[in-house]
Image (cartoon, rainbow, N blue to C red; front, side, top):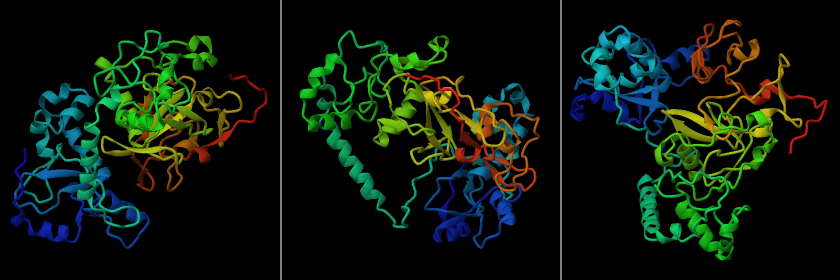
Length: 442
C-alpha cells in the first residue's frame, strides 16, 4: 500500500485544491482533453478537475510522500495510461501466461503490481503511481442549479429513515404466505438481498395471484408501507404467474436458451438480477418503457425479468433510460420489448443509409446485455464513422473482436477525438420499415 502523504509537505497541491480544483496527473504525454481542445479551442483549462464533482475521475496514489503532481486523472486518461501498463505487464515473468482478463484483474493488486510498477512512474520523477482501489467517487456537492446541498443533513435523514424502517420489520413479512400452486415460479429461488423467499407483489399491482386475493382487503396505507419496506430488493415488482406472454414467439424459441429463466448465482443471488432490481427500486420504478415503441412493461422479481431485454449503453437513447455507474463508467439502463426485437406488427426498423433491417430476434429475453445492442451490429460504413469529423474510424471490412468493443471509447485516427463513435442516436440511424404485409402478434 502506498504511503500516505503528509498534508504539510505538499503545499503546491494544496494551493490548487484550496481553489476547489486540481490537475489531471496522467504521467504519459498530454491529458487527452488537451488534445481534444486543440480541435475545438475554448477558454477553460481542460486539465483542471473540479473537486466538488469527481464522478468521471480515477484516484491514484504515489509512494513519494513529497509528490505534488496530483492525485486524480480523467477517466479516459487513466484508461489509456492503464493500457500502456497492461502492455508492459504482458512482457513480465509469470504474467506472460495470464489471460487478458487475469492481467486486468491482477494489475492493481500486489500480485500484478509487483511486476508492473516500473511502468507506473509518476510525473514527480521520484515515485510510482498505483490506482486507489479503496476509493469510490463521491456524489457531487452541488445540484444542477448550482446550489450546494448539505450532505451531512441528507445522510442524517437517510439514517433516520433507516432507523424507522428497522423499527417496523413485521410489515414486510405480514403479507399472505404463498401457496403451493403459484404459477411457474422457481420454488427453490431465494430473495437476492434477504436470503428468504421473495415477498408477493404489492396490492397496487393489477395482477394478483388467486392465493393472495385476500390481500386486497388491506388498506392502501398498509400496501404502500409494505412495498416501501420490501422495495429495497423486489417488494415493488410483480410475481410472474406463468410464461403465457411468450406464446407469441415461434415454438423453436420457447426454451431456456432463448428465454432467461434461472439465476446464475447460488441461492438466488444473481448479480445481473440484483443490479437491475436494485437500480429500478432506487428509482421507485416497477414498470419500464421500450426505447423504440415506448410500450409500458412490468418488471418481474425473477427471471425472465421483462418481456424483452435490458441493455447498458453509454448514450441516453430516451428520457426513460436510467443513469447507472458500472465499473466507474456512466451507463444508461435501457430496455427493448419483445415485439420490437422480433420486428413484427409494424415494429421493424431499418438503417436509414443502407436500408438493412435490424434484427434482435437472436438476443436472449428477460436478462441484460452489458453493451449497446444497436451499436454491436454495424451494417454499413455510416455506422462506423467518427462523431466529430464523420470519417471512418475503422476500415469498412474491419470488425472488432467483441460486441462490447463497439460501446467503448476509442480515438478517431483522423481527428484524434475520443468518443463512443459507434454508438449513434437511434433516430439518426434507424427508421420504421413500411408495413407491407401485416404480421399477427398477439
